[in-house]
Image (cartoon, rainbow, N blue to C red; front, side, top):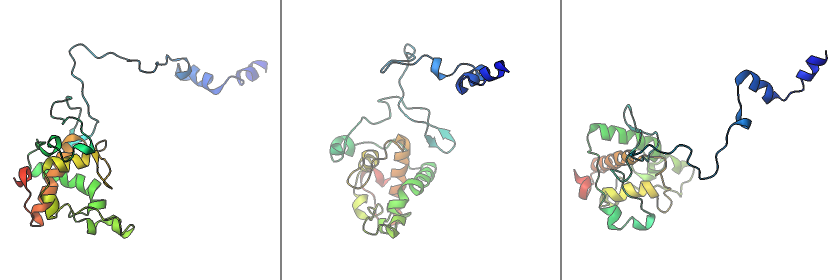
Length: 194
């Protein structure tokens, strides 16, 4: 009887460790700023999340400073750094289809499914907070880089989506916004005029 009662007094985690093996209390902890595993020699660092890059394709990373534009802030939106960003994604059917899916999922709540902010779903709850009309003539005058930059860093009431939408997916959305502008009868200026 004594053996049974003394065994019942052990903490639950020690009992679980007996069956499941070691537990976190006795594992080695890492120090702040410690590199847990050094990168292999001659390796290339990557900066991207596991966000889809296209239909059925997983984005496993983009080489830093490769196709990914350099970091910029809201103050740079009207400057040449952002205005002259080239759109690396051709506006083909696959890009427009991907852009439509992303636009409907992320942008349509504020800007409406046709890009007209006054027709957005959120206006029924907050009528004074109307999203910008993306299919109108004003946005048609913006450069592709500017539209991309607004998604990446945000501006005014538009929050930043740089952490939620991958680099190439932002360009797919730019291509789709250009398509919405054409459908509304507004010819995009600059690179979006393809």
